[in-house]
Image (cartoon, rainbow, N blue to C red; front, side):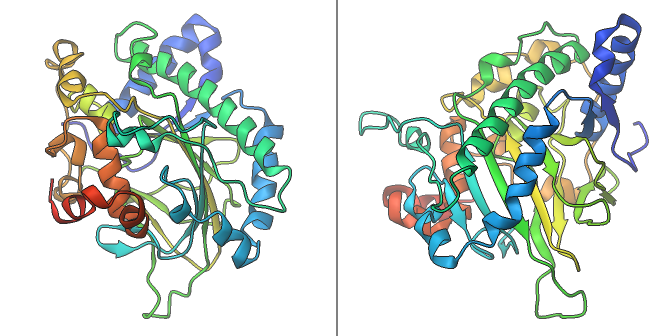
Length: 355
């Protein structure tokens, strides 16, 4: 077994432009994929104007009056899109100390009773009033990250000795974006939870592209390595933090691990923008496991720590056959008021099972 990682590797995407650089890039990427599950990407070609526009919009967005936030509450949306306040989402059975707006690729709702219930996850955004420029800022960012995500997948395929385009058929028609605010908290107050978001693996997408939208001195994100130690992921200006989602772990037969991570609250407020590359909702567990099984079955993989194994991995180990239903279950369990309102026929089942 290779020694466990103690820092997050940085992948320079500009190296793809020449053959010698590309070979080095693919070797570094392969290590990050198989031994870490987290990496930074730099020189990613996402325009600075698009990133800066979003970052500048965040403080004003979260300073909106409570009634404006409530008007676009996630509880209004069967698609789990909108605003949720501090403590409204749970990870590992504990409330997360963060507030967030969740958006997605703008699509119309197409669900009807003859379709699987998980198809109701597809649908339009809720846009807060008094923010006329927000929609264009968010849609431009989603467009750029969608493009980056597909380019990155081609490099991932090549790093794993597969053809470009191998992973695109697994993608959804809708990707998701969260704009997240972690309020500052005092380390000296035992009554206030330090859980910004509890230990988890990303279950909301294929890959996650995270913009840490606060200054470098603001810390909080940590990744669990294979020996059970928490490794800091500091802000590196000009980069995205990129990590593997659970569905990709399944498709690679566990060769590329979805790594456990968490966010701790601290003395500074923190802004974070994760983009979740969507997974095709009708993807079955058998399809995910078998499609590339022959390619990955012979590869040696490292083992996770005990704590890493203990985190919920519903699609990998659960009884639900499609990615869409597994995803719906995860969202209902995290947003229970929303689940009661829009999905009463499955609410009790999802909350009480341990799949």
